[in-house]
Image (cartoon, rainbow, N blue to C red; front, side, top):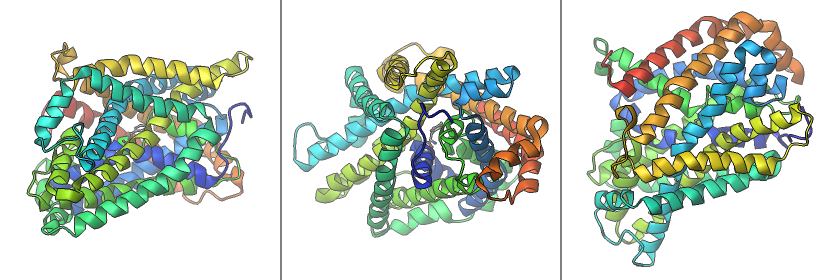
Length: 465
Ligand code: PFF
């Protein structure tokens, strides 16, 4: 490990940062709704199986590649072989694409924190009794506001990453993640004690095996796979980069189990906070930005006097979840520039690297913010709104392709000894060796091909299954 790059001060710090990366908007707006419409408890079981057979091993592979090479995604793959550089390039481009919309949505969450605060003080800058759909629609058609909030979100992210691995990312994560957990517990308590809350729990948890009829099971499997893989921040070198700062004495295998476990726990808990409240106030459950900014704001409005307090706390929870994911995305890009400087024998300049990556991200994010989820008449590339267009190339294509390539490379080229050497460097045994290698060779690649097709099917509406 190059001392110029920094490393995690403790395993807890690493774990909080990695779980922070995983826990994000995907957990809140993706998981609960998908679970509800895809078989409830039955979906959860499928999700868990996929997390073990595919998510866990890809996580393990990325962490090993990162720690063994001590490099970010591009340099790490270049180190392994010049033939693999293309995977590193995809991993470098992806964070820019994802951040182009992640910062915008994070900015929206800040806007809603402010608006709920405004309502608390009965100020004119609150939602002020406006219908939540109209309020959101009105906000979307004000591109300058959208761009300003995006800028604020990106600025916070930039300042944290600029602080470095230990003093920036780790210092933020060890405070933010426990705080996020407490906020989530408060939200669950409020939500579950509302009259009619049980209907929401039933929506999420009641097993419904009918969704598996015919080719339904393929749809459910594809949905669960796509969700799992985005939620775990896999396939674009995020865990490679974070793994590169992990000390040799830490147990990689245990961390690769803990991250998916905690991410799934938070996803289920987020559902227990969101769905009961949605049903208690007779709203329609949904996913995506509509759930976060229309349905839930409607819930807070219907709560009466205490609504703005819960609204503020909930949007703070979303902001924390989004920032801890955004810093990991910005760090992937920043690390690439730092590696480049080191390779050229220069003194790396983290401040400048973070700044230039943020400028690049902002350039793309301006388009997404100005587009306002398609509200402002900007041209539609390939018929998509800009958010979905950038999402298509990252989440839809490059991330699953990157993860597919990685599992094949580990399974068939690098092999078990190469992996074992790093996993046991801490003095721990690699207890799941045979299992993991079967997954790398056969199950994960198959799963990833399937997820890739599922993602494209979803984006283009091919109606394959
Ligand atoms: N895992 C994040 C979420 O669920 O919202 C999104 C994400 C973060 C994807 C970081 C990829 C990544 F590298």
